Image (cartoon, rainbow, N blue to C red):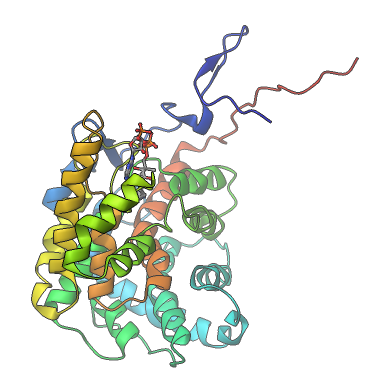
Length: 370
Ligand code: COA
């Protein structure tokens, strides 16, 4: 069946836009994506200002005046630590059920163990649980036992500790923290919209954020950073960068980690992550190599598509950063979920305040009865 891909107005005056492109479906105080200016604003702060904040400080910012109790950064850090320990206890007996599932399917299963009981701190429990589950799932993929959380650490430091089985250096912790902050919220992206739709039915916070995770799982949303590493693997050597990229473009392929639907200038998240990745240059990995690939890719794209500004997007440096701090690429979507859970929970809290069921209409284009 042919689905119209542009905005159409029917004789009745209703407007349809495929993919809801350009349609405003919610008002929010949480974040603003300005694609033309290359700007991301979270509750009055530009992303560049937040990139050095702790993840807990950003949670305090997002949840402020939406949760029943306003907690500061220190209180959130303490409560998240305690909630990680509870999540670990809850998880251990469920681990055998994860066999045969992909890492994101395993996270979906573990999150579904959390009951939709209305409590004052369910948003905290959701954010605390993801790193515990994601680290255990990644270790299980390597045949390793899960590592018990250390409630005294910050969320990013403990996430890496639970992944590796030992505390990691401050550069790696800072890099992961910057990543979690950078992806915390991003307007009404597909997973956040899905989360808000479910929240609007009053199904409960965990049901809502699990819906968000299901939307994030798709390759058009949260599943993209893996292919950037596949591209770097395929290029292999510096001499091969230009020939490989040229041949890929000649075949009409897209270069992974470049271009964006909304940003027409540089994605501000790519810059924040590039700075964080640069600090890891001395810890090994292929950051220098990737920067050379980026430079040549941008030059080739500018030459081939002079009318279409194609810049580095968030996925390029996400892939490098998560690889440099030690996450296997199969776990990248789960790490994304650990950061985006901040936004999902804040949107659930905001949607609860709106209190209006999200129920748009469809336009019937099928046959009518005779
Ligand atoms: N490499 C090469 N060419 C690209 C490109 C890329 N990464 N991204 C877009 N283009 C080209 C298209 O081929 C098209 O060229 P044409 O007009 O000559 O046919 C033009 O730019 C417009 O493409 P379009 O699909 O309309 O752009 P979009 O804004 O809808 O696409 C993406 C956005 C992200 C889907 C697209 O840039 C892409 O596929 N990027 C690679 C995958 C990626 O990095 N995904 C993560 C996104 S955060």
